[in-house]
Structures are given as structure tokens and as C-alpha cells.
Image (cartoon, rainbow, N blue to C red; front, top):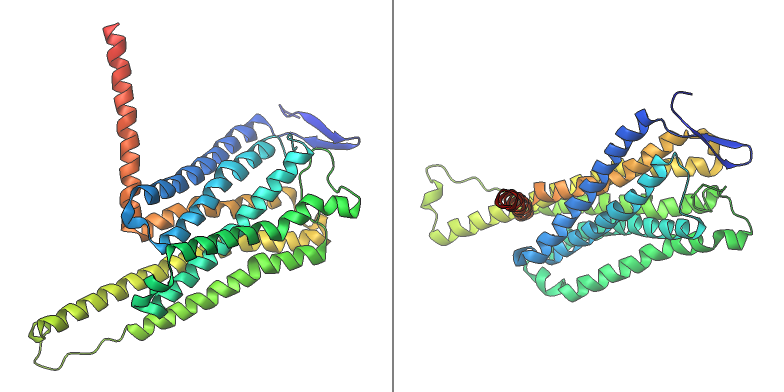
Length: 344
């Protein structure tokens, strides 16, 4: 069997380990994903902390999303990388399995709720206009974020912690780490609707309302024949320019939201459908295909920081500055090491 090894999860259940030809490139790929997710979202958080101009209510939601994605990268993706490279044999035991699942499911749901809050916040800005700053305060935003974390923890955590105790049986074989309700069709379908279908429907409606609000404000009146723009009073020209700039920013923000929602839909829909199928037909989904969809779901954490940089010149500027500072420090350390070697 080439250079692959064999291990046993339990009597009669034999699992083939990955060969080195699979383990090494797979390990490199997973390491790249983990580093990108952790680094990209860390840059977002640091930029928000360093640059006062980024500390807006809207960006507080973005940073909350970055925090969830950072934790997914540094915890969920990192731990699952070990599980994956061990040929899907869970090496951390029963209690850590439950802790891992609680943290992972909470983080994933929080990222979804945050996308809904980001979309709703943009709609409020367009509806309230100049009154938005008065209505949507930092304190109010922090309360919303705090409540969202409680909701994210509450949906899955009780079932993850206590399902096998309530039912009196553990569905996991030694070396496995799956949620105990994986094969319960009603619970899986109900939570999939709450976690994915309703939020996706909500952000779709919200984004459509945002589009309508922007379209209302994008009314361009043609200038009369014989008059050019410069013949308008000074005040009128300034107001018109300000309105155009505001509309441009609104359109850019709407496009960013559309991309955020699209990435969410593409990365989450296959996994959600798959979990419902598995709940009533475990053999209908190939193991490797299931694992691929799991990583596709987490890929959202890798993509989101690129969207922040693409949408916001301030985030992009801060990312470049932080990366340049790190490069300069590395060069300085290298130079000092060389000098010390020469001197010695």
C-alpha cells in the first residue's frame, strides 16, 4: 500500500492514513489558509485600533466580523488541520471535542449575525441620513454586538454539550468528533433554517431596500441648453458635488455588502445543504467531499479581509503600512545580526 500506514478507530473499523505525497502538499495548503485567515483579520483589528479615523459605528461591526474570522483561523481551522492531517482521527479527546464544537459553531453563527447587522446598519444610514450618528451610538452598537454573541452561543451550545447526555448515547466512535445531533433530521433542518436560510433571506431583502434607497437619491437633472455647470451659483455647485460624492460612497458600500453576502452564500450554502442530507442519509455524502465543503465554509474568513481592503482606502492604507513596518523590522533585525557576526 505504498508508504501509507493503517490505524484502527475501533475493532473492525480500519482507516487508511494519508500517504506523504498527500500529507505534505495538504499540510502546506492548510497552513497557508490558516496564516491568511489569522494574518488578514489581525491586520483589520490592529488597523481599527491604531487609526482613529476607522473607529466608526459601521467599522465596529466589520471589526467584530474580523474578530470572529481571526478566531476561526487561529482556533477552528488550526485544530481541524491537525484532525485532517491525522486522516480524520480526533487526537484531543471527548471534552476538548465538545469545547471545539461549541467555539466553532458559536463563531460561525456570530459571523452570520454580524453580516446581517452590517447590512441593517447601512440601511439605517441611508434612511436616517444626518440623524444616523445621533441614533446609532457606540454604546448602542456595543450592546447589539454583545447580544449577538449571546444568541450565537445559545443556538447550538446546549445541544452540543448535552445531547448525548439527554439521549443516553454517544454517536461518536473513538477517534471521531462530530456533533451528537448530526443524524437528527428535524433539529439539523430547523437550525439550518435559523442559521442560514433566514439570515440569507434577510440580507437579500435589506440589500434590495438599500438599492432602492440609493436609486431614490441618484436623480440627475439635465442642465438647460446653453448653460454649463460653471454657470450655477457657487453654493449650488458645492451641494451638487457633495451629493454626487455621497452617492458614490453609498454605491461603493452597497457593492461591498453585495460581495460580502455573495461570499457568504457561496461558501455556506453547499455545507448547509450537505448537513441536511447527512441527517437522513449518512452514506449519501462522500467523506472527502464533506471535508472539502467544511474548508470551503471557513474560506470566508480568508476572503473577507481582502474585501475590506478592496472596499476601504483607509483599511488598504493601514494594511500596507503595517506590512511595510513588519518588513522593515525584519530587515533591521537581519542587518543587526549580520553586523554582530562581522564584529565578532
